Length: 161
Image 1 (cartoon, helix red, strand yellow):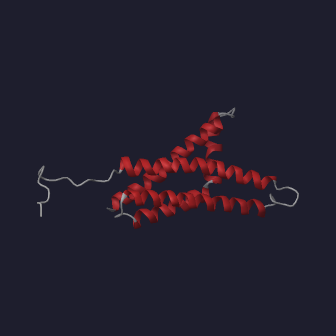
Image 2 (cartoon, one colour):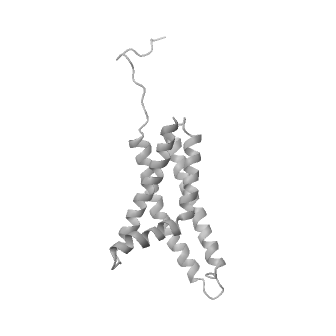
Image 3 (tube, helix red, strand yellow):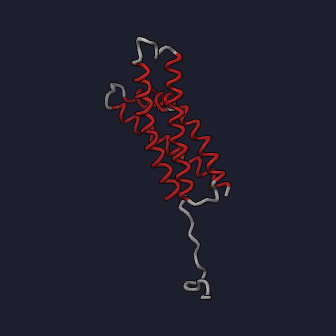
């Protein structure tokens, strides 16, 4: 059981980061003169810079959820992981907004930077939400498919009462 929980955590977070990296890189490559710099410099900055709080918080929540819900049905685990991802993204947008205001981006004459920070955080968060949803569904429904009990003898179900 512990091996399944660890595998679930590693696969969900790993697939999410890989998918988000690919999608963010694809968006960045459409307007880039340096593809290598985009893949190894700009994409990680967006992924781990703008979404660092959300990724860290969601990783902790996935660990807790995988441990607590290890004996629950697949539906409970999927719903819990996706709700925790949404909560982590909301916290991420809030943290980025507070940081932008605290560093002067929300001064009285220039609210533009706050709007830009929120818009970028929401857009990058949308990419993470889609990647996380795909990863959770892929891991829970296909890779770590729930086991169905198999009758040892075909047709030897329970006797009628």
